[in-house]
Length: 74
Image (cartoon, rainbow, N blue to C red):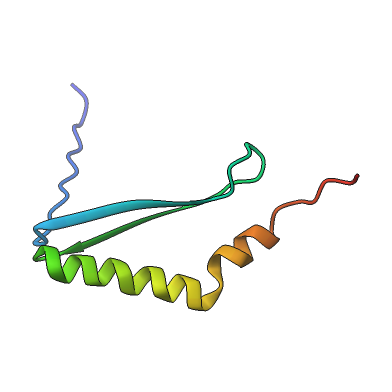
């Protein structure tokens, strides 16, 4: 018989919010950031999501990701 491995994922957090932020609408002109936050209650979790989105914007994360895309020669 083979060995069995079990993975347990425990979290005390009651609320999980997941969002996807997408910029652009053409197939090759889209950037996507996926974000997940967890918390004890809806209000705190929503605030944590808003703070994280604000921090990403302030740090210029989306612009940095966009600038790493290879440019196509015209």
